[in-house]
Image 1: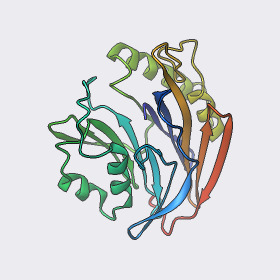
Image 2: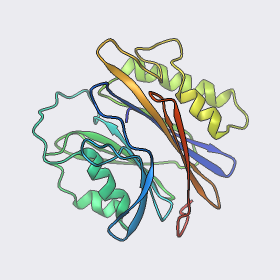
Image 3: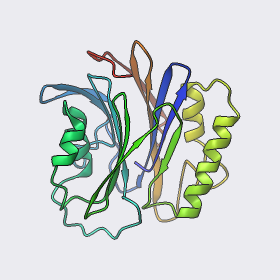
Length: 238
């Protein structure tokens, strides 16, 4: 929920996310396909609220959640609903953009949502207002959570990402997972964190999309388990 990258490699797209949480939070369940309304959705479930930070639907769309909007906010603890459930509502919708416009978020904690359904959208909710930013889906992008990383650290992580892109002529899914699984000599602000406060990187989750199929790859770092789940959408939106 705290680091997300979108990478183009030939005809394939890789969307990869690190989930950073406090060690008191329960581990997510392994990725499974669920029916949500009329949609088939594949996601690792957060057992605390039943939502997720990373999900695919049967149209080949991907939605990923990061904590926080633009700045590190002070949680009130009095929220109407989990952000992970909001993400599942969006990915299960046939019209996710329209749903985001209509959705009431006033009592939802601030978040950033990256949505890819052929087009790439960055959506932010700061607790008061919605912000939409269409992005170029033919370029590489990275996001870091505003709740965990200061502006200068976000810039430093962006530079590391660009060096990784520039240093690899043909990037593979494994290359990206390895990059996301590296602390880069910094357990406080690297891509894998292990802070004295109890914040740790729990997992790395990835969607590999090409012209014919989607695969979800999920690396449970705390239990040293790896899951690879093929997903056969009804219609790809690449």
